[in-house]
Image (cartoon, rainbow, N blue to C red; front, side, top):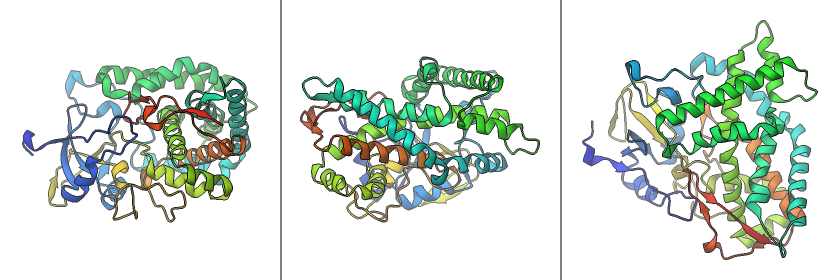
Amino acid sequence: MSHPEALIPVPEVEPGTAGPPCAYARLRTEAPVVKAQLPNGETGWLISRYEDARAAFADPRLVRPLLSAWPPREGSDAPPPCLPTFLEMTGAHHERVRRTVLPLFGRRRLAFMEPRVRAMAEELLDTMVAGADGGVADLVASYAEPLPLRVLCATVGLPYEDRETYLPHTLALLGASGLTMEEVLAALYALQDYADDLISRKEKTDGEDEDYIRLLLAEARRPDSEITRDDVVSFVVTMLMAGYKTNIQHTGNALLALLTHPEQLKALREAPERTGAAVEELLRYVPLMNAINILVATEDFTLHGQNIRAGDAVVPVPASANRDPDAFAEPDRLDLTRTPNAHIAFGHGPHACTGGHLTRMQLGIAIQVLLERLPGIELAVAADTIPWDESTPLRAPARLPVRW
């Protein structure tokens, strides 16, 4: 065990930025595997280099613990187990569920959503333009915030009108740093209960829509199915935790990055076929997660001279890995034409983010529709005066005043 004085704090993002924290540059060079004090008081090994972080995500010796089981607590103090989200499923169970769910999120399967997402984006922009005050509007409230939830509802089958019920629990889980473990778990159990109730409602009614909850329920009912009804509950919880607030915040940060690089924005507007490469670069450049990705070692091993013990938390940091100069030329420069671009914004290996293509599609359409509808869009205020929402680890602009 390291002595307490050997611990470093998890590097903080500079105020008024999305990150990644500058301190990771020094860690990549001097201490690529280092024991850190995590925000909840536990300790974990921070892994800051690209190659190491990518390998850690795919390492079978490192598993994701259940949210209710980490940090571990014994005896009467231990909380009741929760269903694993897709991030936390392991082994054969994870393989079975992944085989069923992953095809739903492939590029081909998602193509049916493209016209619907485009229509949602166009409708939001029309409303923003119609309500603009003196030709200025807030791109966060009008566009970056409502679009991801509408896309999620349409794809997954979440009722938009239930948002007052499920969003507070979702936000409590994602802003977890300010809450006690009891409050976090209460939100998680409440979200599971909501998902269970929603699925019961769908089981009692026939829906004309082929949403993903209905598709998975039909699959779970087949005699030789690889998934259960509980897995469908886990799916709903996972999509809310992974597909809502992170997408809002990443979209806001991506749009800010574009608006503060007007030359590159203009080039993209003139060559919309490059949107795919631009989306990959925005995923690399803007940290999708500054948050803590906890993995737990199942056996002892050594990495860069550090002895990692079974039970230790290991924390690969995509935000640092995606700015590693050994993996990306001029990593701190936004280059919308960068290719190849093997970032790990969505992790790597068996636990790579299931909804990665949905996020890509949504961001790509959001950018294209914005540039088609409002080709002259620009910030209406100086970038350094923009207020920030710094309530969760993924910082984002609270407002983006724009004119066109």
